[in-house]
Length: 127
Image (cartoon, rainbow, N blue to C red; front, side, top):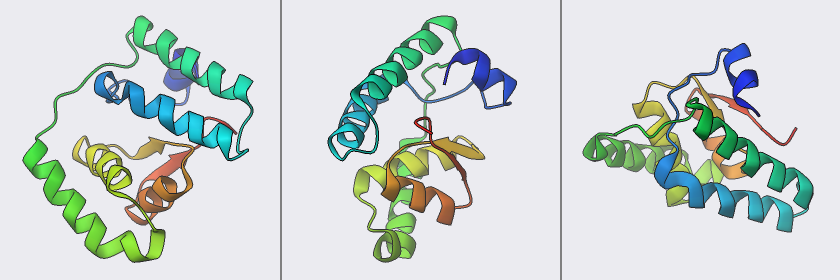
């Protein structure tokens, strides 16, 4: 998704990015390895993230980490058995909730399931 699409769809311009860059690479790499997307799609999605960061649509946002980790614990207790979510899935969803997000962009199935159970609308950038 490019920055103009993010703005046109009304997605928040305040998105945690900076330290999550490696997570994006790993997540898209896993999606490619599982056959959920083609390498070209994965590379295009990463290029779009870079474009959006350069355009100022994506920016690093500070979080209250004690509150985020408290949410991680709640998410694990309430949804891990049903979703199979991992700690990083809970961390990403808890961060989105802490920022007041209404939507989450992810192509990871477990993370998407957790996000939905947490009340977030899920947008898959590969579809």
